[in-house]
Each structure stands twice: as C-alpha cells, then as structure tokens.
Image (cartoon, rainbow, N blue to C red; front, side):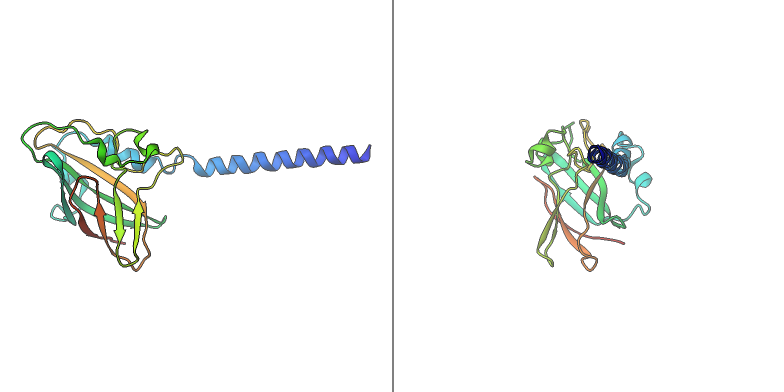
Length: 191
C-alpha cells in the first residue's frame, strides 16, 4: 500500500509541475509581441498625417527603394532594440498616377507567411560583413512581424510601414534591405 501511495503522490506532483511550467510558459508568450505589430498597421490610413507623425526628423531618409507600378519605400528608421531585434520603419507610397494594390509578392514565398495575408514578410536584411541574411521575425502563430493587410493605395497616398528582424551583431551597423520586386538599399542601424 505504501508503494501505491508513493506512486500516486509522485504522479500528482509531476502533473502539478507540468501544469505550472505550461502556465508560466503561456504567460511569458502572451501579448508582448502583438503590441508593436498592431500599432503601425492600425494607424496606417491616409496621407494627411504622413511623415511628420511618424518621424522625429522630417528630413531623415536612410534609403529609398523603388518598386513596381510607382510604389516607393522611403526608409526613415532602423532601430536596434534591447530585445535582440531591429525594427525598420518608413513610408510606402504610391508615386503613380492611379490607384494600385500592393503586390502579394512582397509577402515572399513561405507558405506560413503567405497564409496570413499580404505583408512585407519577404523582406530581408543582408549583413555583407558577417555574410548573413536575416529574415522577418514571426510571432508564435506564424504571423510576420511587419505591416499587414494593405488597403489599395490611391495616387500620391502613403502608408506607414514597419518590419522586425533579428539583430545582427552589435558591431554591424550597416546592412542592405531587400524587398521582393524593389531595388535594394543600404541602411544604417541606430542604437
């Protein structure tokens, strides 16, 4: 009888330990990554609040990337964060003379990212010094940590966008931003 009681107690203790670990794990994953990606996407309508609302310095342009059908990406910030990632921000503008839809190819070709709709999930940062390529980060459900669900852009309209990547080593300050169908641009990462 004593052995049965010990076995039951050990089983209950193990189940309790597993439940506690799962609870702590889920609490650690909850919500922290969703705040940043949602904010830029929700404030992305219209060109009235253009660069002044997003940029601290209206003249700061790190790179300009030209895309198809008059699309133009002006990169205004590449910030290294303490959490081990880099956030690249800017404005996606329709420089053409008619309304266009943002191409689905900007999402890249990974099934998990494509499944979550149009995004900038195909973007990469290339560290030529360290000979590495960094892909857009994803949350725990596979959604890319970039601006998503683009509305059609009218002629002259711009949209604030962002992309998050793993941070290259601290001594790497210059990287190349690549986006499918766009020209490439070299940007400097700020601390």
